Length: 507
Image 1 (cartoon, helix red, strand yellow):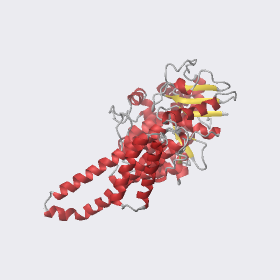
Image 2 (image 1 turned 90 degrees about the vertical axis):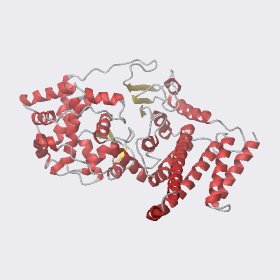
Image 3 (image 1 turned 180 degrees about the vertical axis):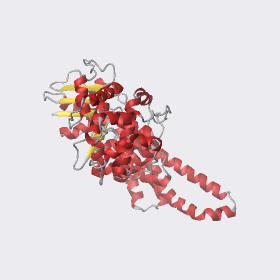
Image 4 (image 1 turned 120 degrees about the horizontal axis):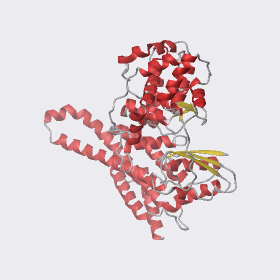
């Protein structure tokens, strides 16, 4: 059996734990129990990894491929790669692709540039057209400009296969697109910025592909081009066409930044007409992205799933910026299913909350934040904790959500104070708006109580009774004031508190 694991830093741990579903393993956290020893969260997390390691590295001949390993240390907990992959891998063979100069004690095999013959095969595309000698010279020029970068050569081959255009015309059209500016973006990593600057011709080729997306068959193909832009902010994992399209439809109108050189590619546009690249549906738009070499098909759940190349994602982030990031968050909130989109839910959480020393990139209004926490963050945290024993990170996510809601509460208090000290005329002008804020304030406060109780229940499962009791008492106080002593939610929180007190007394 071949097991493929993405090695991107933020998602590597989740990707390893996802193997439990392929291998039929139970790595869920301990359930609540009032008898027997309650294990710490660290013990439960370690046991989840140990179960996967015992299955992976026994005598069964698995082939484990870790693709694009970014670091030897776990991004979340700082665990060394040695803790995840033992020196003795049993019957399993491990292949790691990485840009790191050294990885553990594995033998390094540097991949040389493609041979010229292989480069020509990629550029001729899947239709394998025969070109006259003068056209082959332009294929050589593509190869020189791209430095035989396989992804760039694949893009050339895809464009030549799908468009009625010659290598000469394609090269001239791409070459006339101005080099992107040298602006730096706070949301781009230094390595990504440097890569774009070091490969200007590849960036021009991607710009050309984006123009083709927008102008297919002489009309703007807004869905496909927007799917590309929002796809930049999803996790490096397969995405369903339905989820991509939902996010794409949340984007504001795309400006036409290519007017000043549209004439340079008019020949290419004329070649697009009648070539079957006019998508009508979500799946057609996703297929177009695959045809142009910007993404690849992925075998996942029923339906159409694609995965963008990392370089495509870097280009699209640089192209549109944070407006697409916000649309991605809104799309995930609307249709993101934690059971099949776990990594994409984490990606949206990174955008909304930031983590560690990284700031949030997407600012949500109070009402949108409430909906996001209810529909995305809380289900994600509960699933991560219960299904995969990702205990500490799940609790950290819930804590961040609580802190965000407390900041929203403070802003409401500030608004009320300003209103109370304002003039009578000003009060009359905002009275209706203020009443709406009060309803939202109630939603924020009750959601905060829900988060406190959820955190208390999860802390109980790791033996943190004192912390859980404090959170639960705060929850009861809020619900008593907001809902009353006899409300079902208040009584449920009191039952949780009773359980915490009873468990603590047995320690």
